[in-house]
Image 1 (cartoon, rainbow, N blue to C red):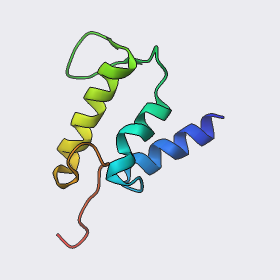
Image 2 (image 1 turned 120 degrees about the vertical axis):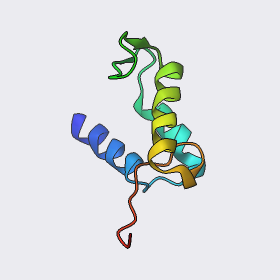
Image 3 (image 1 turned 180 degrees about the vertical axis):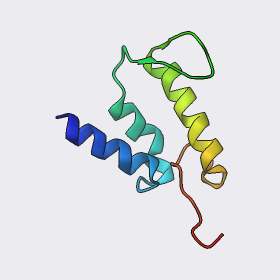
Length: 78
């Protein structure tokens, strides 16, 4: 079970999930009662919606051209 979840996470962050499916794919991975421990916000963030917000913001930061989320891609020609 955990291997399937990790594989799905890797597909999500590597950009293999289409942008229009990113948010739904993230919903599929996160439990309703998820607790997100951020190195920036020093208190646990509780719940799927709040966790999804943080992860989508991080995805946009690492890959701004993707819009909302979309994974951490790099340009190997740079």
